[in-house]
Length: 566
Image (cartoon, rainbow, N blue to C red; front, side, top):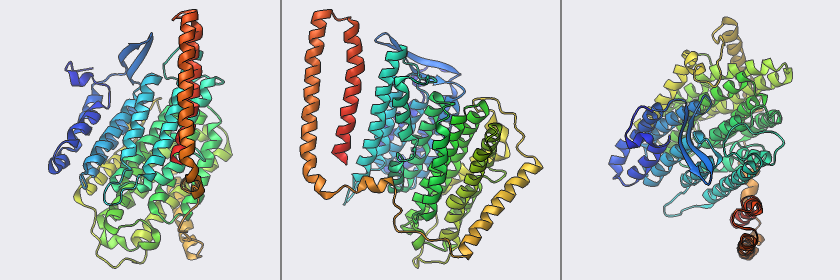
């Protein structure tokens, strides 16, 4: 590290966390002007770290590593810092105290989790990201609604409980707290994979994202879309690289979300399906596990944060101005919101068009898939690339901006702060697309790949032209659009609690609370008796306390939370 003053000895991400506390107490106008400063300080702070481990702390004979920057964590940390800067500028359009504090703290704790070198540090940041992101979903006012926020929090806490349970088992089996590649076939493997799977929106575990992201404010959705799922991608790449079971999981994510997204009427929900779809690409790469595949997963995480963030920003501007993002209620916005339309067009092109970052990352993905000599996998990724361009790009552009006008009131374009944030994301897309070596040189493994060959560029342009033609034919033949008012998904089941369950809910809660208290009391009695009989340092005491009790408490806590909130 290059500075000796106290602030520079803090772990990565802490300038954002401290900035959240400071800005929460500032007057509204001052908050708006100071908003980008914590993110800029976080980037400057990150620049002071060299590769290696920092902030080692001894706890109960184990070593905690509060900061680790290496070839895998550094790209994600820088990406999160950039996303925090763009989100902070976007927040200036509506600088609410709670949203600013939650957004900055969320970004800071996400960076801290990325740089965690041990399971305890990872768990602490994991739970802090859950709490901070939940606050982005809290809608205050005359009719506050906490339902979505509570359901979201429950799912995130369950993920944390699974992480802690897996960490305890991992320490028992290996004697180490270090968070590195996880050996297959261990007891901790399933626990930790389940914890990461929730945040990575695996099939049937994705309902929280479909419900929560569109329910947030325009700025809240921008922050939510950037951090949690990419943190999960990082943890999977760190711990489960080369796990072949991830390949079919990613394939299901690609196919299922295309079907759901094409039927969805709400464009913000459509973009969430698109987000999960692109996570499927990254998860397949992690499952392949070769150096090129892992680099492709990281590259695509970077480009995806840029172009999906740009599209979420554009739709946030539409929501703020038009009051809705439903296709059935929008049309002709290109004339009323030309700046927003332009940025939305650039975000769509950013997915896979030459000169944009999406082209650089998607090309690596296809190259890594080609190396596996599995033609069906390569064809799936090609089809998924066409599908996402139609679903999250053309479907957004044409009905909302170029279709017939449905609203008759005056609609204003995005305010200046939103336009500046969208411009910053666009510049990132163009910089990494026009200079792909800047992207490739920060990836975990060296990449020797010639992106801009004539054959490659022509092939990509033909692919995108074909996608546009397919979209036009679907509209011409009346096959599309056929959106429904509600697309049934896992989040629908989360909300559909039968009313007669509510009468028994309090009784169940009280019973479980009493049961947990009884278990804790019995555990305390048995623990004290073991100490008396066998001594404080007995191996039986140590393993029984840290192993079985942690797992049983995790099980009961998860069940209690599910019943309490659902």
